[in-house]
Image (cartoon, rainbow, N blue to C red; front, side):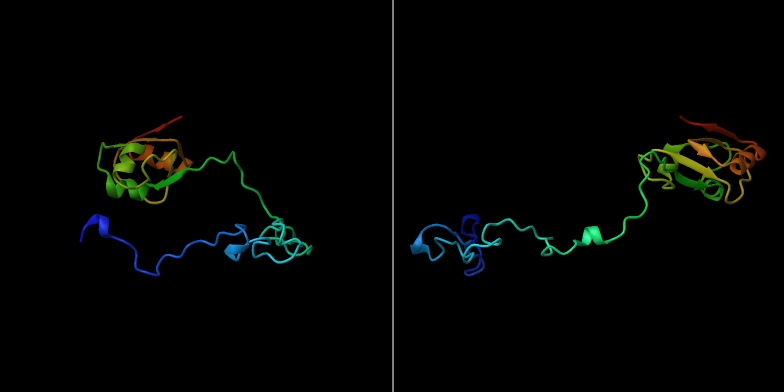
Length: 146
């Protein structure tokens, strides 16, 4: 087999219908669209329902998406205590390295779910009050990033 000999199986490819190319083609004059009317003039869109109230206007509209919302990726204290050791530095980069947050995560928030039994240096964009209290009680520090 050679590269220049490769071809699709006979009958696998079908030529497109060329309309409006004269009476000899069999698809001339009215181009397979019948006589006159809206469909012959190519003006009806696929979601047109014949004058009936369209679906997108019949359905109720609810809620909105707040474009000012700040989304955080959440990390619990139990995750930090299971993946980090005493004196380790916990920041978005080290959390991403240990697969606790996605790489390139914009913001990280620390929550107080679980216990922290040793001191760590935590740098995050936000933290709950209980998480801050628990980190400081264990002898660690919490730094809030911009």
